[in-house]
Length: 344
Image (cartoon, rainbow, N blue to C red; front, side, top):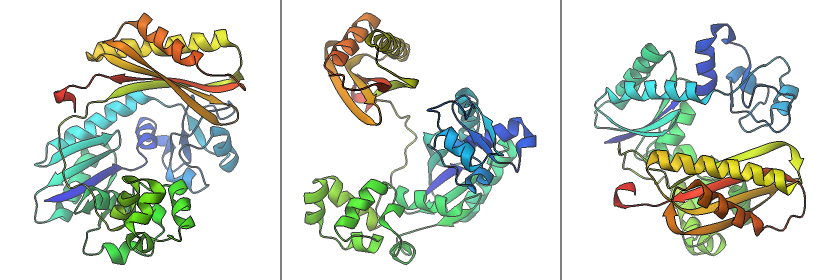
């Protein structure tokens, strides 16, 4: 059984290019309402032409404009991307493989085949023929390897990374090259003298556990050894909760205005829970103060509910436990759902 990771190339931008072919070959940046002169809007994705100028996902649109003044800026259109994603997944499900969807633009595939390269090529051809989108496919013994392999295959390529060639391919790379280790953790590993994948693979698990905790520490070494989950399942993922947040164009200090936003978010989450047939057990409020200090407070409900008034009261109770110290730039509300045996 092979594990594959299929990743759509510059997906959101590619959908926009399909809608407007004149954008092909041009630097395109998608994010927010598409206006790079408005503050606190970030890049959702960018074409490779824009990336060549240093534009990256998560970057403020204003910064992207500075790096690539000639870019075309477009507003984000989630319903269009969701529809395009579903068309791709339907194409994949027509093959004799297990499809585990991981987002709009990626899926893990479980395939019992003697020729994974031929299957990967067939998947690419079918996706392109039926949706107009291109994708990269990684092949591995587990999800971790396949995920890294698809990144090595971009754009529109196929790459295999297995336990047999893991050390040769990965040992000299920085720890940040591993899926699940970001820049912050990489810096902490470097403080322990662990700079490369090989360094981390040879590290003492007890030392890692002492520094990062009994679960995360050994897990980082597990990743460095090329290990990963091997099970691919098509059982739909059931969310444990939902969240919504608002980043304000200008920092807010007025409690009445903030509570109005809080109420809107809480009521929206209550309606969504009811529509999904789920009940809410806990409400969490997140506040990000200027310049970038984030704090959270939680309220556990006495009984599960989807009543908007109860959810709002719980959010306001959580908010009341903050001690305002500076202007607010972001306000968010998250809810936890009840989880029965069929939801796990």
